[in-house]
Image: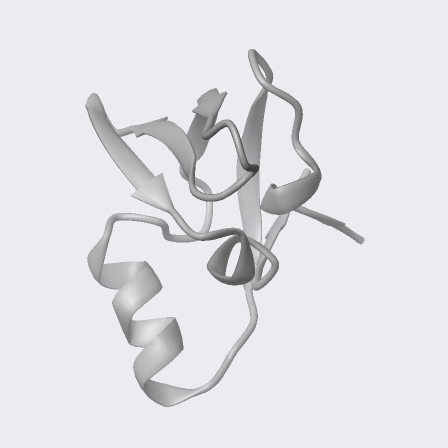
Length: 73
């Protein structure tokens, strides 16, 4: 299982599955990160958190702790 946290800068991945419970999963889905969505990792902050993504044509910053709950392929 590969998570969004493991995707390198400049790579794209497709969301396969969301892990987590209740409010966490709902918040991830509300940001547009749903099954089948293509995600491009633009950059990562100097200290490694957060990571900046391009999703559905807009920029999105996600904490690495949240990215661990997103399974990609």
